Amino acid sequence: MDCQPDQIAAYLDNELSGASLQDFEVHLKRCSSCQIELRTQQQLLCTLDAAFKTRFDLPSDFTRIVKARAESDVSGMRQKTERRRALQVTAMLAAGSFALLGTAWQGSVLKPIQSIARVAMSLFDLAWQTIYDAAMGMTVILRLLSQAIILNPHRIGLLLLVAFLIAVSVLPLLIAKYHRTQTIE
Image (tube, rainbow, N blue to C red):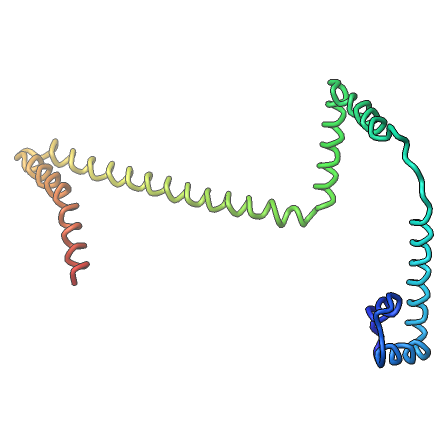
């Protein structure tokens, strides 16, 4: 029979009977660790019995005394200096706990914040770069068109500008039609 601590508790509570009681008592005679554990638990039970047998009486106005003591202990919290002191103690405790957390705090709080900040910065950078590139492209196109219109003596540039504006306005319709035909197929 192997050592089983729950068997000791069952033995003390008189829950073992028959063969299991005999097996445990045979094991107990051979196992010194179970004998020590049995003595320890018996001593604990004796101590608890002695503690609960002593009786003490509470004063008849016990609740009034506790209430008055609690109110007098809390009365200092109503003063401004006590609130300030409580805030300082709380701040010191928070700083101490963050210092004690050390790398665990860094890994569980700081790293996710840094990760979110990196993603936000990359999205902002992407948006900024897109806007910048679009503005530069439009600037180049407008500059070329304006040079073609102004410097061209035959006014073909004006015709090219009108053709360009028509092409730009028709382009979304062509793209939408292309996507509709791709969806159907």
